[in-house]
Image 1 (tube, rainbow, N blue to C red):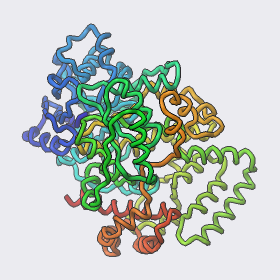
Image 2 (cartoon, helix red, strand yellow):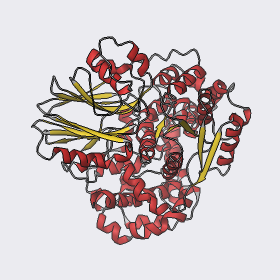
Image 3 (spheres, rainbow, N blue to C red):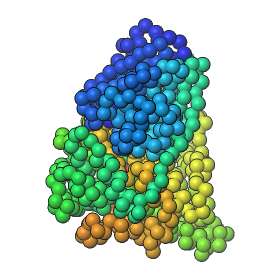
Image 4 (tube, rainbow, N blue to C red):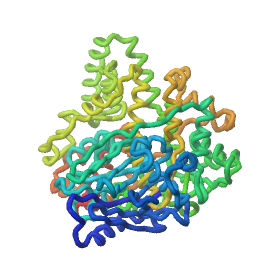
Length: 614
């Protein structure tokens, strides 16, 4: 795992390019504390910071091909690099690195050959013969890659946006449209960042930069068969692939079945150290994890989250580059694990892949209700009920009101899904929540975004799963997993987010994945030979905190500064009256959304301190 940064330039690199590139590398040196290097040619500057995992002795970067025609900076891991290497004869290998396999693939098969790569990666490549550059991101969006176009003169890119700003080719500024979507989704959908002019390369795409300054973005053909004999065989194959390493591999361990499955399979290859943070919405979670470790005969390290949350938030936000909910505990867990190992496996993606969220169950019930209730009846009843509940609620956007609107929308599955995930975008709520700066801006339609991106799939539960694998998993779960682990120089691997496993499960329908409506029922059946019934029958819990209690206990003092009426009026983003009304609410689960909104507001003002005023 590493950090990559640099730029492609129409004009010859100017004086001072070495120092400029060094500043950019310094901004992401946490991603690669073991080594660094840079390459400069007439029209390209490439910088790399390295966390050494594979080929510790000869895998230094930037790496130039044996022909001298191509130079690469690479972030990530290729798990099938040895099998690919054995099939390439027309290239003279000089290292045992997975990075050189990417160079060999490009020189022998071009960009279309990248579809054979299995792993997590983003990379930048400079073709010296053609004088053109390439950016590439893995098909499932595990590794990040951001870019900025500087008046068509150059393309500046990096693993993290902060490195782009270290170039001094642009300055960080808040994108109002992105903030509006963030306030609705609690992550940034699509290929946005929170910075004006900075975008992500879409997952599974390449960007070709040419000397005239033009760029051409296209999908990389994906090669995935998903031909495992069974689901457990597909999971096992992925876990074994993710064990490829020249250093020790550990694992995160919760009380649930996803991480337990990963550990049960991984321990067959090597002794495992596992890591658990004693925090979350279930007080039994850490005890469940300890018991799982005992049943699987692996070592389990446990720690409690540190009490000084306030001092950690700025550091966490600096790494995330966007306000995130439920990120603090991931930041703490990564820091704890990094004291013991350089690589950890995670169970992230199991719920998305095997339909394990409560939201999947709710949408399944809504699907059934949509068949039973005539649409006119549901619309009329939902409209009347939502107005009644809205007038009775102590605060806007109550959970009962939202449920009534879902009833009103049955059959319009993108809208039902949006409401289920607490998308709230409406003229009345914007007037209540926002200040003049946001109200004067041209803001995108959050519900319209969901509608535009909703898969062409008749079954709403499967459509939700497809949508969330492409949007929420990439831009919420994987985003924070990458940033908060790399903040501590820790590589986190996600065996459930694997192209072959995705291809296998993509052949399964809802009835198979959720037999009799049971969440994650198919996976439970598949892993039953691995895990005891004690583990399989535990109630599901989340690695999250109670929003209202967390705010009241840990953030209220910060809010006196960052959400003061004066600060709110000066920034102009949010409505002081809305903030004061919500702060008077009691710390109840019913007001979870309201305190999430306050948290996002506080973190947005903190974001402005961290980035806009530096």
